Image 1: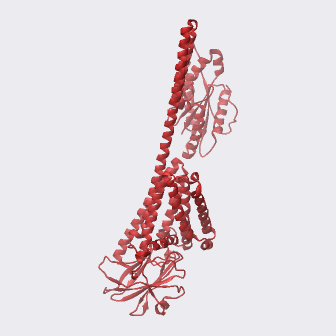
Image 2: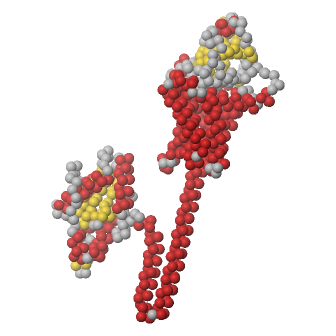
Image 3: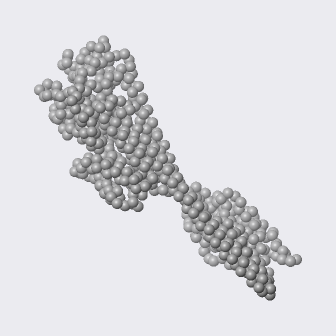
Length: 639
């Protein structure tokens, strides 16, 4: 593709000394046979241009054919002609397969010429501009069956057209070798897709659980790479858009642009480029703006893409982004280290791939798919970098907690020192003034109790943040959090959710008659009873305020909640707490409201329905259960 061609230019400069002084050998396609048949290949010749010529003209015209030194014609705006001879020693006709493992070529037209008879074979054509149904063989590569007659020479003519890099990794297989090669090729690419999907699902699940936007942007980068690989391997056209070549051309350009755009978004978030500022931050935003424009042009005005100078910008992009990441590494960014290594693996694999296309390395399955191997290694290393960042942030939180604990210990020691000084002063006052001994003793005792109280408060802060101090039930703040979460869970799982709003009848009279201390005992007694009726997993029992309580019952419908409320009411009525020799009749009224998905409501609406039902229970005589109706009025409850 065109972006990789830019990197190739730099590599050719580096290897100029290697190539100097060497004779240019003609390129000969590889022949693979596993059936014992032999096929003799001639050197490949090529001819630039002449897009309007037909095969007969290309065969007879006095044009100067040139030897093809390597399987790469760079970029040929007007296409090219390619030919080579094949000679089978078989005594009967045989079928061979010409495989062109560069499926992003626009159009490849192939015909065989038989010099002995002066005849032409049928026209075959393939490429991403040709629907799969019109290609000679349904394969992710461009494959052409060659019918070779026994003991006869034939000439293969190819007309190749491509807007991108015109690479020609040609191989010829007999039927047995072609089947084996196809299995190996598909297995390697399938392993790549399988591994990438595992990484994709793993990081998607991490985003769901952590809600870290960096994982979402990493998943977007993964998807862009998968779409790009679907295009360059031919699997996209084979399985997803076999008969829509227009979509294939646009999707190829779009996925390539996304492969530049999405890693910028991911790197900006993951490496926190903005916090470092400077030129890396400026470069990141300028490149994101450019590739965003390329994406929009590709989607809505693809004909303007030729004016965007994507090839030189892609080269500058690779250089600047690598320099920016290395700069962040030098400036102490821990994540930039693995990030640089990850990108380097893709770069090295791409270099090997391009060197193979230039003929400097063997062109085999490893070098042909080397970029996929590098891409997979890159994503594995990036996943490791994400995991390393999580561990680093966890260590930072632990260190912060340890610092907070140390500060708390220092404060406690300081308080202890102050208390000891005060105690010594009090002891001196006791020795000097016997009359004030009792008073000083009480003050010292009070200070010690205050100290113990502070220590107990420090130990119970976490529990008290969600617990009502009097009843040891969940407090109002914790209930508000839980009811909102339970409503969302009920909507998600489509299960009912019931709320019991309870109020102790005539509790003000209990306080006025027997005192607040006895009233608090009654509240604790009722709370213990409610706990016994809210012990299922997910049940929430909370003190709502004053003498009001609330029970959240996930999974209970209105009928079941009403039955549970009646059991609670009966249990409270049976308590009969004692005040001296007198037994007090203690009763509660309960309002029941149920949310039945797909209906939806807010926590305040659900509680308002329960409160309205509670009001009705109070109004009807108290010590009873009332279940909210569809048209329940939202009126305040009555004590």
